[in-house]
Length: 444
Image (cartoon, rainbow, N blue to C red; front, top):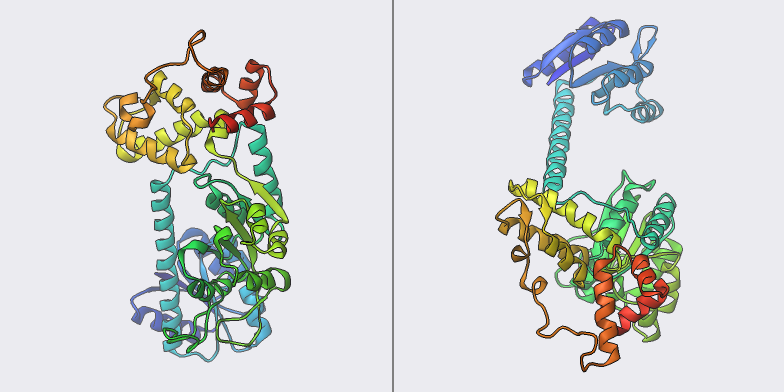
């Protein structure tokens, strides 16, 4: 690393430079703020050791100027006038660390090692983020369906508050993705986003994972564990599939939500929690509550802001746009020249029920792009269920029940329409009636 040493005492600059150079880094010296600013403007530096008192100059003021010129610069303050107030103020203004005078060469080496480790971690995070972007299509949280866009608008309006948010909807509709986007838009965005998958563990292990435990709390508790609530401190705790949380744990979660307090397993001490809770479920929690599987008081505590994500079948205006986005992504990823869908593929997509929702759409198109043999994705590239047709088509005048005619007619109109509203207008009924008919006829 290239390291700038800013101090008005030549002996301090020399001593620091020797410590820096013995660890394999390059050292450049500056006796005052003007020289330091000129060097930073014209040369690149990774680290700056900066004295708080530069003669008549204020090192804290210089710190801000240096960071304005090079925001990624790791500035380490040192001074003979060390105190807690100065240290806190330096860190508040963006200093990486603080070393009191007199310091030893070992202290210099340790702080440089700390900076190097931090840089490696930052690079690793950037690599992982880049890798994740390469492996997943860009998140699209917009909708041409007015009802769906209203749901998203509510979620995003609530994002920048501390309100508990409950996300409901079938599996594969993007509840986890929406939860992460809410966190990204919140005041807690710089703090952790921690997920607890409620169905994945037994009651005992789930309680320990959520709240932590102390050594000896149970047979395998060989050391203290903080738990996910502590890990999410200052950030967001996402409780995925909360409808499957055991009844025995629900009162403890209720206390966390009401009083912001919890206890680790095996410990009587109350701990405070500063977390924002987002919960999700593919179950109807109101029905779970009536059946006695979900606490009423917990339901109403969670039900502050509730958003319901509809299935993909209820988003006909979004279907082809989302499909095209996935097509472009996977074509890039696999180096294929597939650019569009054949008309029969579009028709098949519109007629299909999409029980797996967005997750199924991604998987279907990923598979199809891999198998595609031209620049147009064909019906033969899709799974078998998309090309399946009934042996006999319901026709007017055939010896069939009126309900079968109605079901077939509604199916065809839905397949040919871009939105539910358009289909309802064609059929001469309101969208709510069409929705109910689709549910009754099993077309959703």
